[in-house]
Length: 167
Image (cartoon, rainbow, N blue to C red):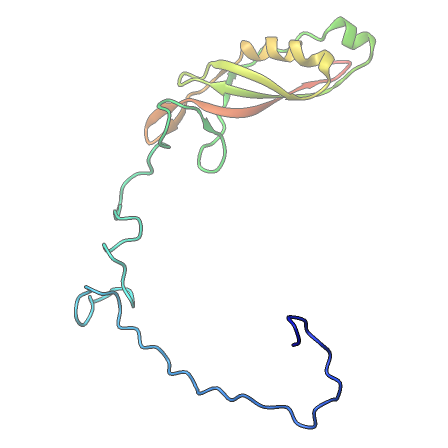
């Protein structure tokens, strides 16, 4: 280094200095400070302060409803099974859609209350000419209530309504 600048060597050295480091002694871990001498039978090596990660051990309790907004709808899926329809009104095929020979699936994100009534809807996909007919029909549908921990709950799910010419 000369004047703060790195320079390339003018000659290649015959030998390169080898640096040898002393071997590192392995650390010995005696557990968490303040633990029980000798440990706890069946305990975790190294232990966990307070006993359980997260603080509270919950044994044998039923799964809880999600925290947050009370009575907020729970998305159908996993252990929350989709409700069975009790009554389904067929959608009226829009005249303009028939004339344009439009058919297909309309998917609607629907929220059902604790009694199985459709209380809110939003179209997710499908032919725009069929949106309103699908929404009008779904407003009239009725489902069996969904239960979680023996309690009726509001759910959110995707409902697919099929429009096919000739039906």
